[in-house]
Length: 577
Image (spheres, rainbow, N blue to C red):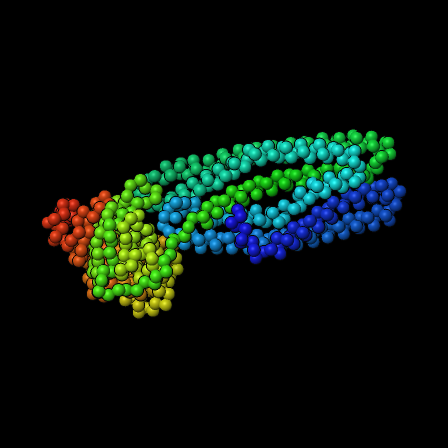
């Protein structure tokens, strides 16, 4: 929680004056029973209507002033809490965007979203309630007890019996419920994860007719949340009845012993009424204090969850600006091995190769062989566990990552478009890209043919995730987006899988003709897509089992030869059919 206090530095005045005005309201509230006692003893007792009216006017004045102080505190609390929440979310979002892929993998996307939204709101609410009630509730308890002592010391002993009893009840209930709030937050993470997976994979779920299974799994997750919340609610529900029971017994004791004190002339009727009011104020303040403890417990639990994200170190950033080096290898792997933190085995084992500027490297292999992992090491999305990855002769760990990634464009396996216009999507690499540059990239990516037929052309709106485009269209638009601003290194991570053979061939020819100086790394499952590559790496279980041209690998690499023969047989079978 301490790590988050720095986001309150711009709201020091609100933190000071908010509780101060609430304190003034509490002081005025404590004065009211004294005024009531005077009305009963002096006004009603002496049948002095003028005195009664004057004192009632004072009560109204106290109420109006208290209302003004309360509204001022509410305003200051809202300004501080929502300002704090805004700065916290902005900082958290910025930090999440600075994390490496490994850092994001540690927590998970669903949990990150939950911490950025639900947990931030909970902490914000904690700050709000702290300013509004954290000073008022304890002050009312202490103040009411002090005021009672000033009226009658002996009768005030009832306060010092009742208040600890209520405090014990609150403590016992809080000790049971506090751990449950933390469990509830963890169950919310699971529900968020299932929601995200189901919404993103809705087409797959329907394709396999698994709607009911997913509904049952989600129901089980939310039932866990409900069960935990209901259990907390049942335990918390004991608080009010028990507290009011103790309070009412205390009031009975005050009336009983107070009556005796009145008969002996040691206490007046007005003072007994004031005693009863102070007892009620103590009870209500203690109940508010109990609710505050619940709110603060949730806030502390959420603050710790947010602090866990801030504790994850951002990507290590070097200080070398990227610059292309002519006449030497633009990409070089030297005995590179890599293992994901959550995996038990290495995903890459001693991979070595080099690639010159303008060359095309093909990467092929079975599912899970390490193709995408290899490609992700080049822009330093992940860092090699051992060995070196060099780009333009410099270890990628030493580069300023922004400058490196401006030189490297990668089109991932899953094409992702963002809501907005097609032009806005195309300007992600270069916000100043002209329509001519965009159209040129679309032509190279074989996308201009269908884009120019759209009613609004480049102004065509893109729905969330690009759902208004087909798979092949999204892939070609994603490739075109990567080509804008002519990157020095282009990585196509199986991003032509939805293209037919003719479009795939046209794309490769266009890349070779239009971007001859660009180094291309193409990951594909098709041997036909890679046969013109200057060099092909064959991956198998994280190892490079073959490196060479298409013809060389057919002769010397059994894995590549087997893949090629299987694909040729399948293609011949389709042609004959």
